Every structure is written in structure tokens, then in C-alpha cells.
Length: 557
Ligand code: G1P
Ligand code: ZN
Image 1 (cartoon, protein in one colour):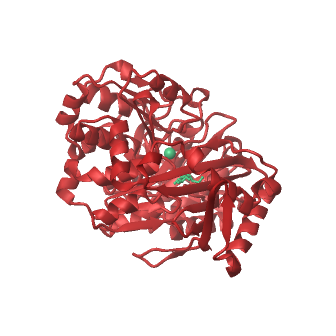
Image 2 (cartoon, rainbow, N blue to C red):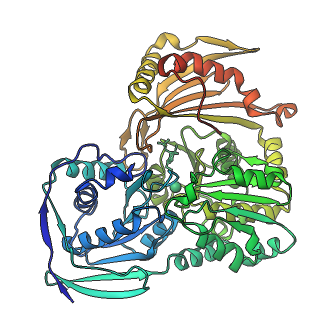
């Protein structure tokens, strides 16, 4: 069939600057005239070296408006001279699977339609993210170019008559303006599962699960359901009752698809009954994970990263590649640094956001990395990977033949415990949140604060360093400034403040607190108790309540 495209005139729309992970806005914002079109045209022009002849992957988490957006993007790719799009069946593909497919088929990148863990539905959020040919989120120099295009755009190209049926797997070739345009619709799950089978020892995992171990996995009505069912039930033989909320829903069934103790409370309650040995939850697009042991024993993401770092070589992939180094985002606890030190490995500290790990992986500096925000992953792809993390944990448990709780406690015995907590103050008034950050910036800019002592309860902490974290990428020397306020005390304890870059409205303040203990008598204490003095100091120094009017956080992790 032959089609022709048209150019539609448009004008720039404010506020299309990609954040920590793509452009996330309310669905209502995306539905404004030309909003999606402007951003997609800007991705094509700013994100790809050359549009003509390129191949792109398109997939997303199944949230409201996703399928329409995918169809629109196909029409725009056709009109702009893209040669081929590889599209997920029904447009459903997890973020890690898109990364896997971009790399496997050596495409020029991909467009992921997701707002990750933000709620979905007509009154909730949508998002569009561009990933480059390495399979990872576009780095800042690329997102800057995309943003620049959104500020100068005056037309977009579209082929409005091209209607593709996303429910049919297979390849179709169209002629658009005399050029060939191929649409290949692929099974969403197969490529990813095949890859997992190369990375992990599936027969040994199957053995482990068949030895009476009960698991419970919550896909939170996001995109992970089909992946989890296929891997955990079909491949590894766990009963169907081991997986819940497995049907991807446009509004995630009203859930907030974020795998933490607050939003995955149902899973926590079920695990607390003590009938399951291992529990896990994923976010809407499947890149995040939460790990629980029997009786809902919670593994902090920072500890999860450190434990995996310690045992990494029990996974066949790393036996083969060797361990090349570790990395964590700046606010993530230093537990993994201790493992790195013992194992004589490098450990990189990068700003918040997965995009900062990509260069290090491409340069062969890094095998395993993670963020305190429930993100864990490796250089097998260029996104964090929820199901990979679960398979990595099951591999460790099978290898050690111990419970989740025992495994973490053994880790503390070896390395000491990095107590950690994060307070989120969601929906703050933007002006007030900025005022607090201004106040903190002034604080860290004032050298007389170094050496100051703060006391709370029976503890005293002396400021050793205070700054706004700035990162120089060791591979390309690019500099990313203003990545978070840090107060580091003489004993290594840290207080960090930053504003979220993934919210769709208002401001979210994140306050991170970390303190290290190597007295075994304290290992099993509640982090909220151990960290109380530091939390009080953080609240005092930041004047958070005074400047924002907020008395308590929305979420504590
Ligand atoms: C949050 C997390 C960050 C993560 C990002 C995308 O970003 O804090 O670690 O990479 O989501 O999942 P933030 O909202 O803090 O900018
Ligand atoms: Zn996500």
C-alpha cells in the first residue's frame, strides 16, 4: 500500500524539558493539541543522528493513552523517513525488555511510553522517553538537543492514513512518499526471556523453587505480569498462585505501581503471614524491584545491591564476563562501597538517574549498579531490570541455600550495617521547595559550616564536607552540576537533599539519611530509631518544616 505524508504547522509548547527519566506529565497535558506530536518530532530530530534509514523500537507499560501514542509515533516515524519500527505486540513491553531489544536488533534507539511508577489513567500520568542505540536512556547532551528542538519547532510530519494493527505479530512493508517503511510487530516477552536464560542457570533455579520454596510476585497490574508468569511459572515451574496482579491495566487497577513498603502494602501484608519464603514487587514498567523475605523481612535496595555485589560470581553471566566494577547513585548507601573495597573493585558514584551508568558500562568499567530507589541492574542491558534482580537474588539464595533474612544478616556481620532511610515530601509547593533548596545551597556555600557540630539525642556529628554534588563523567568528561545537597559528617554519616525530577506537578523533596554501625548488638535495630538523631539534624539544618509547612513525609522508605 502507498501512503503520503503531510507537514503540519505547530509552535513551541513550554515545559517539554525531559527530567530524570523522560518527559512525564499528566495525561491531560499530553492530550493538549500538538503536545505529543511536538515532543515526538523533537525526539526524532534531536535524538537521532540521521532519521533517514534509521530503525527504532517502540514499546510501553500499557498505561492509559499508551497505545494511541504508539500508533501516532508509527505514523510520525513513517512520515519522517525512519526505515523500520520494531513495535511490541499491543505496544506492551517492559522498559528493560525495550533496552534488550534495542541492543539485540542493533537499532538506532527506541521510544518508551511510560511514566514508570507514577499512577495511570485519564487523571494520572503519561511519559515518553528516548533511549539511544546502546539501549540506555538518552544522556544529557541528547536530551538537551531534544529540548532545544521543542523550543524551535514549527512543523511536524505525519502519515495520518497509515493504520497499523498492533495485535498481529508479523512484518508489514508500506510505501510512504515513495520510500519503504517496515513495521515489525514482535512478541513482547520472548527476546527478554531468551536473554535471561543465557544469563542465569535456569535448571538450578527451577530445582531451588521445586525444593518447597514458596514465592510471591506482585506485578502491580503493570507490564510485568506476562514476563513474571512466563519466567516464574512456565520456565521455573512455580504454581500460578505465586504470581498476582498479572494483567496489565491502563490504570493499574487504581494502584500506585511503585514497589515500596507503602504502595505494595498488600504484598507486605501477605508476606507477613509467614507462608512465603521470597516476595517481590515490580513497578509499572518493570525496571524497579522490591525484595522481601519470609515474614516480610525488608531488604533495602542499597543492601540488595551490596549483597548481590558480594555474590555476583555465582551467576553464570558474570562467571563468563568477570566482574568489572560496581556503581551506585550518589544518594544510595555506601554498603556496596565496602564490598568493592574488600574485593578490590572500583565503585563509582554517579548522580541520580540510570542514564549516568551507561557510559561506564559501554566503557567496560562496570558490571553491577543500583539506586536506593528500588533500581538494580547490570551491564547485560542499559536499564535497571526488576526481574533480572529477582533472578539474581534467587541465584544467590540457591547458591547459599539460606533465607533472605539470613543472607542479609550474614552480610551485616561481614561488613557492618549502613543504616538508611529516605523521606519523600510529595506535592510540595514549588516556590517553597525551591526556597528550601536555596537555603541549603547557601548553607553548603558557606565554608564556616565545615567543622560545625550538631547534637541530637545522645549523638554529636561534626560536618566534614558540605556541597552540591557535581559529577564529571570519567568516560567523556561531561560535567553534571547541582545533583543534590550533601552534608557528610566525620564518621561518614550523610544527609542528602534533592528535588525529584520525575514528578509531573508540584515539587517532591527527597531527604536521604545514612549512618554506619559496626556494633553487632545494633544490627537488628529499627533504622528509624538508629537514624533519629541524624533525621532531626537534617530537619533542623534544612528548615524543612518552617520553609515548606510540611510536618511529616508522604512516604518513608
Ligand atoms: C526517581 C529516583 C531515581 C530513579 C528515577 C527513575 O527519580 O529517585 O533514582 O532513577 O526515579 O526511576 P527522582 O524522582 O528522584 O528524580
Ligand atoms: Zn520504572
